[in-house]
Image (cartoon, rainbow, N blue to C red; front, side, top):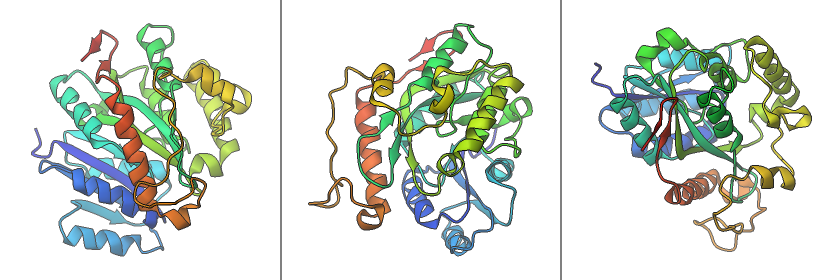
Length: 317
């Protein structure tokens, strides 16, 4: 086995302000037997110089900066460079909860039969600060897969952790698709041994550069194509305009809110500033404030949830 137990892999392109916040938190949490591997797609915003400086300081182990063919291609480069026994996908503009990630690592180290882990995650906005809304549909689809009601499932890539030795079975990401994480889980769910972490692993931060916001129609089309390609029934939340629709109706949220027992939380202001209105723009409040706020929200959510892992055979505590 490798001396490196876990590789955090990142791909990025012209998102330096976001990347700085993601790496700030990651570098604070990386352990001595873990590494950070980054692929930059040839950014023109100073990313390469920033990564070179981190490399010289020994804060990242490997990086490459060159033109690539999109997110999937970038992640594939990072995964092939990674030395760890486990690979954790990290996006360049979202917020991750590292105590939950460490629990995923411990679970995979104790259960060598597990090829990959997905898990709970939620969604927030960089434009204002409000409690994130949860994404229960991915757990519901996973539970259907556990019960044998369908041959596969989908999940986004934020919680994804992969055993490197399982790549020979799972394969790499497919550069043909924009929805690379959804394609990956739908494709591999029918052949791999997955677990689902009940802790909230990450919060997706919707911002002006989010692909699912910039290319809504392409995402809708791709997801319908994936269901046909892999013989996967279209999930209920993908029907018509619900596909990748971020601003979901109040009725939809009510029906799908899995933590109905949690007390309703009011919108709160940035913990690092006073007298900041919730609707204030990200330019005024700062990305550091956004990331700190959503990290705190993840911490609150996870304090109310017992850590367990759902598998096809049983539920592991």
